[in-house]
Image (cartoon, rainbow, N blue to C red):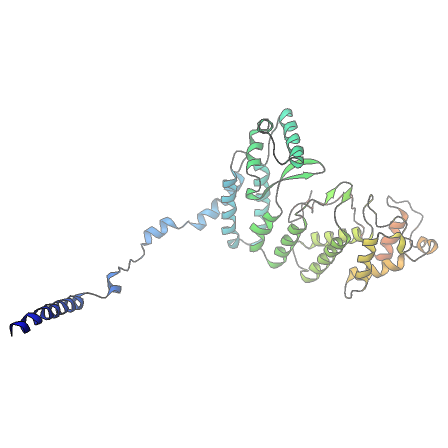
Length: 350
């Protein structure tokens, strides 16, 4: 009996512990109830959430307040505010904001250099294209603002570009395409995004134009199709100019890079231009294709047939180019004195 009680004692202790444990568990609240549900504090939310109306009211003043003493961080902050405010603006005000952005960047990138500082900057830009590293002593000769902008090149859409062998700072064409275009109507959005893409690289190095005939043809076709798709676009006149510009470039070329001198037979035509024109001629439902077919007919005309297309009046353009324009019904565009459509995502008046 004593042995039995001795054996039962541990079992009894174990049962006692289990009963106590179950009792404690029953008294506990569910875990989910132990996590407090904190109701949001309206005052706290108002303090931490930016007042969008206030930001947009101050935006234009902030943009005009940018000077050559401000930082790229300040520009990027304003660009973020522009993204917030554009969806709240009517279309006309959106376009006005582009003008303010132009002023903002122009003020930001302005530098009043001395003659020695300008010389040092030109030398730096030249050497940078030739050598991967520049000596610190040369950098120290630059205007302090040049030193800052060169350290932050690539930020806030700032580029250092070479235009006709002259270095200058420039806002990247992607700026308007990425900061503004997403909030514009579809027609204007498509215009800015395409033109920004076209103008990513400098195309002109007077008197030459650095584009293959295939790309010239593609651009002419793009602007023709754009005008068909968006006849009511606020950029319609600019799109028309670009269409006529690339059409003239395709069929005529530039003064120093002509498609042909005499336009007498296929052998007289630049091979890559001829290949593109022949390919265009096989297309349908395209004014550009119609002109391509007329071009192929024109180069087979003899001089007497071509002479009937012009009068004896003198003109700045060579006679054959006048004849070509009339035969193709090609709107003449001055390819040498171009409109300002080739460095940004929109065209400018000057």
